[in-house]
Length: 248
Image 1 (cartoon, one colour):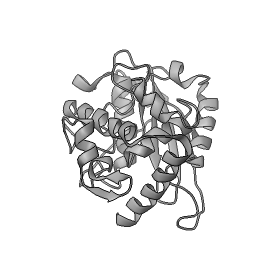
Image 2 (spheres, rainbow, N blue to C red):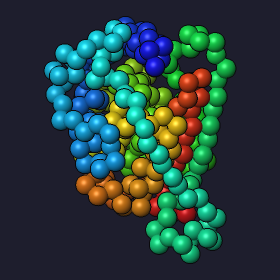
Image 3 (cartoon, rainbow, N blue to C red):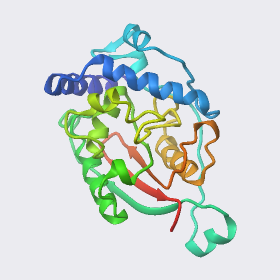
């Protein structure tokens, strides 16, 4: 985990330098996601934080502090996939898979930045959008479960997913767009920052997107979700993207 933190920190520092992203903007991600987790009974960290608390938390490797980083915990997730015919018989309101795309990179350690310009995520989302007929993710998607191992990653990977332009991740969260009442709520479950049972973490993103599409989110439910995006991320910088829909 310490090696990953160092890689994230170096890339986050480059991201700040290149685009003027601030530690305060990153801290807003921790505040947003961990407050969202207060409404998720399965979340492992439920914290009502302030930006100041995040900024004052223990420095791990500049600029990443303790509360900027995801935890490591134990847990599991299970999903049932079925044919269209079978799904209609066994589930009254299934989540339909519109697209599933994966992209892998082959870097040597440290050759690719882990926060800035995650090209596997950009390529995977572009292909998934084509398959699912998504032309404007902010208008066509209703919720996103974005894999965010640290706060700076969510800011940058919102850019890679096409929610905003390059370097605009800070402005995106400043605008409130990714909050529960924003134009595209990101991580209503609390995200990886609140639950990171390694091995199941990416599957949880898909499960939470399905929960939103099926309207089973309880107090973390975003109203009237018709389409949801879920992403995964792996240590060699691979990215997985799924788009789920309320209708087939």
